[in-house]
Length: 164
Image 1 (cartoon, rainbow, N blue to C red):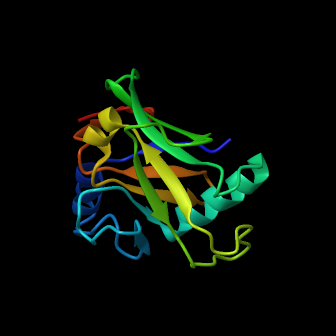
Image 2: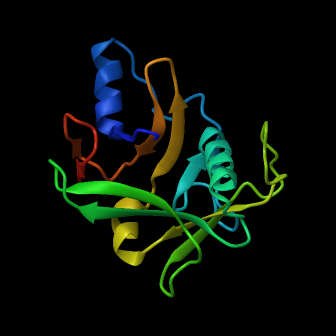
């Protein structure tokens, strides 16, 4: 099971500042903007690494891009008050914002052959997630999705909840 780590943009900048450097938390990442969305427009974005991992996980779960997508949301709870929730869903709900990523972009080992991956966000969660970048990190120590969220002011020590 993939582990989720929360790190606010402010925390990432503070860590780099402590090391004597000022670094953009997204530097070196290939960030994808959803279809029909202008770069810099408030919405959800994801990295190419996240897209690749979502495609592989969807194929493993038997969810095709045509029949479902990834639901990203927040729920109350955790040490800091709010926590992220991601899961596969069969279809968007009536008031969801739907984002499509990666149409025509074939990644290594892509089981979808470049089909778009849909991301569903409910209106309540969108308030806390607009401007967020979903990334996937895989190192020797850990692997999991990172939520780079400019709306998060603080996250807890265990890394599973945040405050906006």
